[in-house]
Image 1 (spheres, rainbow, N blue to C red):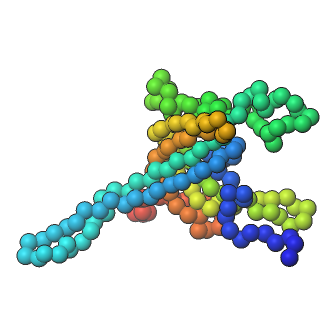
Image 2: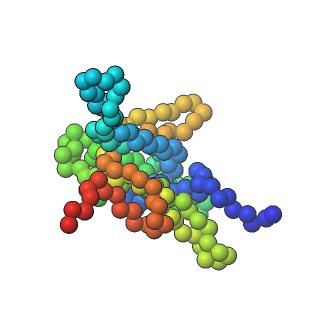
Length: 188
C-alpha cells in the first residue's frame, strides 16, 4: 500500500494564498458566511409568510507563525526554516496589491490600502517526476483586515492572529483556478 495519497484536503496539503502569494507558516484558517433574514408577517395570520434575505456577510481569521529576516539568513548552508522569505514574514513584509498587510491596520495608510483575495488551494502531487500543482478549492474576494493579535507562551512560538471581512466567498466548483464570484446577475 505504499505510495497512497490522501484524498482529503488537510493542513499538510493545503496552501493559503493572499493575492497569489503563499503565506509562509500559516497555521489556522477559518471563515464564516452568514445570510441575515427578516420575517415577513401579514395581518390575519400567526405564522411568518417568508424569511427574506437582507444581507450577506463573510468574515474569518488566520494565524501566521512569525520569523524574522535575521533568522531566515543565519546559516544559508543549514537553514532552520525551509525556503524562507529573506525579509521575514512580518505584516510589513507581506505584499498585497496596494501596500502590505500592515497598511490595513496602520491609521496613516488605512484609506490608501487595497483589498486582497484569500484562496485555499490543495497542493496535488504530480505523477513521478512531474512535480506538483495547486488546485483552487475556496476563494474569498476583496478582504480587509479588521483585527490583529498575538500569542506567545514560554514553550511556544510567536503567532500573529488576524481577523478579516470579505465581500464574497465561494467554492471553486468549476475545477479551474479562476473562480468567478458575483452578486450581480447579467441583465443584458
